[in-house]
Length: 294
Image (cartoon, rainbow, N blue to C red; front, side, top):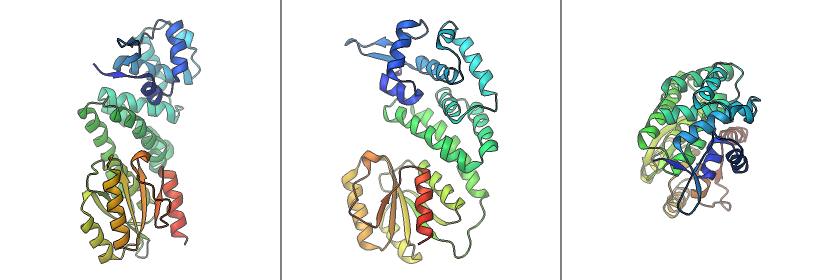
């Protein structure tokens, strides 16, 4: 049985542990189970319910009223809300969470398309898809998403991004150039694809190598094309190996390296001027603008 700790539920739903405990005492709709050592945990059904409850409370529904509804009535009220064009990003992130848990491709496509029409692709990626993937990452890291769910949601997002990349205009002949790749041992390509779209949308020429690229291949193309800027994502817990690869890359080329990904797995390179770390798409956009203006 899938189970979630209080901290995991907080990260996924945005509902504080303090509030969860209050609701547990006052209302019958929430009854978490407990381990033999009396630590509370939540099931997958509890998680789905709390995602829905979070959507309703954000729209002004009183928890005392929600607590008197059946799970079916709660789901129906949420469905009514989500057909409204006035939902916010937090509602849509919650809905995408439900689509991942339930393998609901129609829900995913409806939310994505509505946000695309409302805000455009770049804002949809930076303000919806990126925080959604971060939240799903809480579940992936805790092994609370089975592999088929991970593949399901990853491929839906991947399809959207690749399609949008293909629709972008070709960069100018004198456009700034950047090489995108993942070091050996790095398999999660989706964040790199997101970066590729963002950078191409800014008018840069992108050389995209993908995942698990040997260092020799990276160095070869940098020297052959005289590429001044490179970017990679770090997600795997292999700090020593990545540190050595990065030092070898820097010592064999004159590139400026941009890193992003999991903060705890990115080595500390504060003393290296040729290495920059960006924490999210908006920081990446700002950093690229600064590089382009130098």
